[in-house]
Length: 255
Image (cartoon, rainbow, N blue to C red; front, side, top):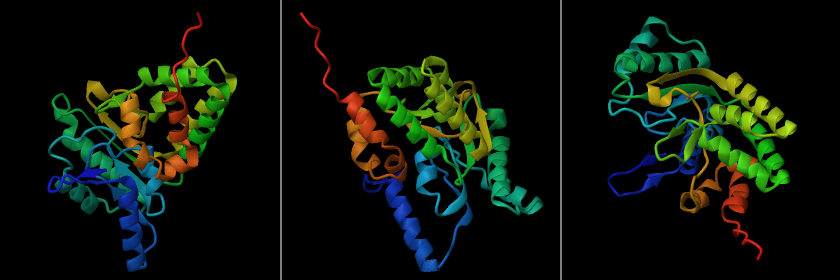
């Protein structure tokens, strides 16, 4: 979630949730309307699921953020002109302020930002997809891999736009039940999305929320340990499925 340049450490999603849990407990607080990340690559379903007990709406970027980060002056101005009454309005204003600030410079600074409701069933539906592909066998994983290769990617090509992935998977898979789950995933995604912006030709297939799908064995094993502790993984068994497919022995040709 966040690198610490002073000591080389990192703040993981799980650690961030633990800090919030402790802070909320000490303050005797319930859910807040909005939690936002002025950091790179936090617009992910793993973050949304991990923070769902703390806020009604989560705002983050699927991609690397431009160096200027958020335009806080513009955002605060919007708040003053039209104070938000709901969590959705808080999210929309955050995204709109971002859109206004980067709209005319997106050629030099392609960027994304989106607000999503935490009262979603995206993880549950994705878990259904994992279970179904597991029953299909290697062909199921091959469909996922092919869909990933056509999907909007970010940073080091290990995080991918979830809606774009579902659209591509529906097109590639030949199993009717997989196609139905893709439709269900797209529906849940759209219902959860409050507002999203994509600026720049390199992010035109972005829809606001990414997920982790490693492209190499190294990328998988390097992150697997911490990923397994995330709520999203506990609900979907995504890491177990990836291990079974990506680290399986390669069958040797007969003869």
